[in-house]
Length: 106
Image 1 (tube, rainbow, N blue to C red):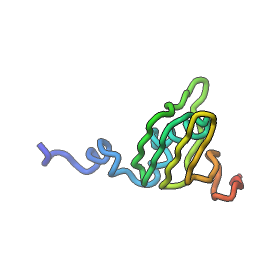
Image 2: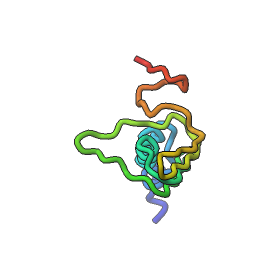
Image 3: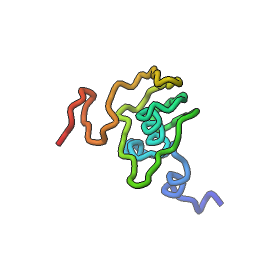
Image 4: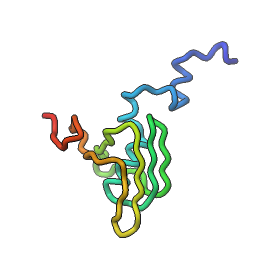
C-alpha cells in the first residue's frame, strides 16, 4: 500500500512536510494572527509551521478574507481578558510588511 504512495501525496496530508512558503498561507497561523489582532483571550504558540491555539477564534471571512499575517516563524502570546497581551511578537499584521520596523513595502 505504501509502495504506491509518492512524496507529493504524503506532503499534502502532513503539515510537517510543508515548506516555508506555505507557512504564510497556513490557516492555523492565520487564525492566530486574527485572534491576536482582535485581542481575543487565549494562549497562542507557533513554531516553524506547528501551532497551538487555546482560545481565540477562526477568522470571519465574510464579507472579505482576513488578510493579516504573522511575520515571524516562532513566537508565543498570551491574551488575557481586559485586552492585556503578553507576546514575543512585536511586528505588524499588515500583509505587505517586509521588515519588523513597521515600514510597508510598496
